[in-house]
Length: 136
Image (cartoon, rainbow, N blue to C red):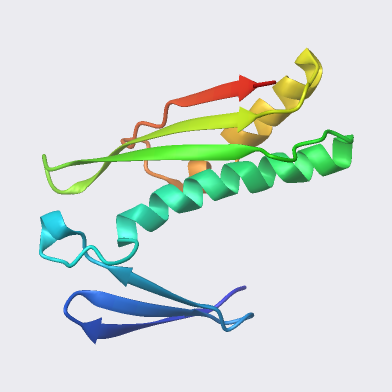
């Protein structure tokens, strides 16, 4: 179990503190939803969670399998929808693994990313197309 403490600071800004490490994170409502857009919005953090979870899960598999994943990146494009209500509609993910990999290694990494806990936790209405680029 991990505890995270959140405090509303006013002006649509929150400060969150990660219990185990004490690391603090500021979130702010986006400009298109009455905020200042001065930091990650809560829905930006959902997109961030997806990309980092995919990379982390792939990293675990890579470490266990002796796959060099150094230099790997993820790029997530978040698109909001407003109907029937405001929510994350699409999270388009592009993952790049610059190191040479075999077909078998690529499949292991794809399976890891597509099975990451955050992806499995998001509502099925959120579209999550994922593109993998290997050896580039």
